[in-house]
Length: 324
Image 1: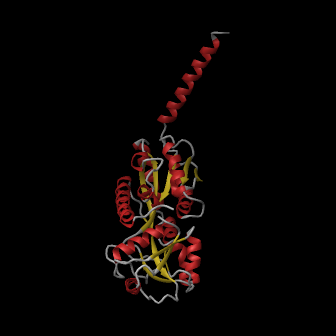
Image 2: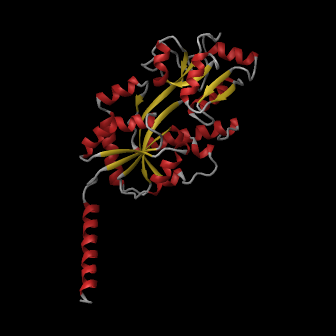
Image 3: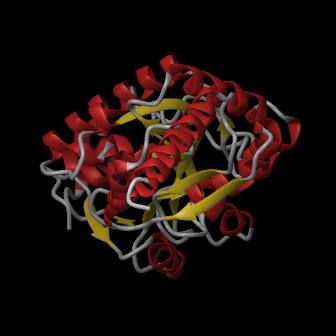
């Protein structure tokens, strides 16, 4: 009996090794894929992940599960994915804060440049500078004129220090040569509520979340932050059209894999995502949210994200922005 146990263990080890080798050799994926969203349910990254998951599952021939791991501006979810096996079964959908965090937080629990491989930028969304209707500025030039008359007194709301809305405002200050008063809130909802109520006059709002209030006349749109006008607000000029040269800001969602993921898996996932994002249904839904589909390749995604990281590093440094 003594000699049977080692033989049994050896046999089990060989069987397990063969099973692992067979699974590794099989075309990816052979089991469900999990999309880790680094933000809470209901946010932009979560909406994107849940929008594409069913279609991506059909394209890959496997179930795609969405799992939220929010916290610390995306750091908790990113840390989890950075430590995940680089086998393609853990995909991260992150937001534009991915390009902000390296400069905003001096000590991240991971190195974005070494921990992840960009698979594709899925979609990007402009913000829109909105004003309370009672605010005397009818357009961006009026805002700039008021800000120059009374530096540090014209206020804009944001969802917190280092948020997309805050950074949009800081870039506006830097490109417009003005000094505004930043009023941070604990979330975009409270900020929007106070702008509608007239407590704070200005807000760089998400197009999707502000659209109903704009149509109801509760907010006045002054300019969108994209390079071109958005179909959701076709009559609203871009910030550059409104007189702020070199101003272009997007919030975006992108897919990432652990850096050591095999190239074949990256290529397969990238191709599947591009097909999903090119579908009329997805394009229509993204347009309804005020955005545009990007369908960037891994190389294009890496280039775009690198440019975004460099842009916000300079804005954060020049603005001396610190996390809350």
